[in-house]
Image 1 (cartoon, helix red, strand yellow):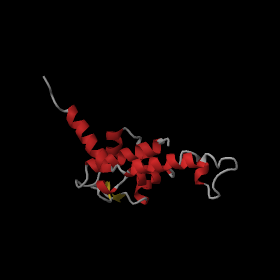
Image 2: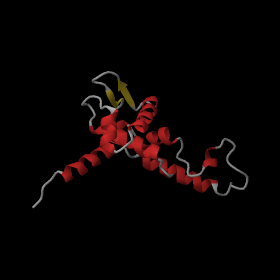
Image 3: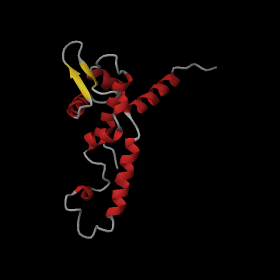
Image 4: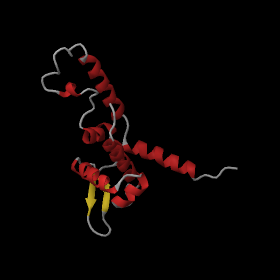
Length: 145
């Protein structure tokens, strides 16, 4: 599986929202600046994330975006499926007729790769990534002699 910019930026936006979970909505300009994401592209991703039920958006001067569910409930498997559309390492694996002629011998290998990818991503939550980011940021604030 190769993660596109859409998957990378979308996940980074969710991690940023998880870091501020329970503190009220964040404006897209804030998320974009903190994560180094172009704001127009982030706005498109936030729409996708809202439609997938991961975030909620609030209009107005005090508005912005916040997680619609607890960060612990958001598994990377469902986030990547929503952003990337498929976890299959090869396109024909998702075709309804079972692929292309001559590929039958490859199918079990690519299914195993897809299933292993899903299992790994399903074990990790957005909350875990946010905690690692929190620790990373905390380490940068320490002054050691």
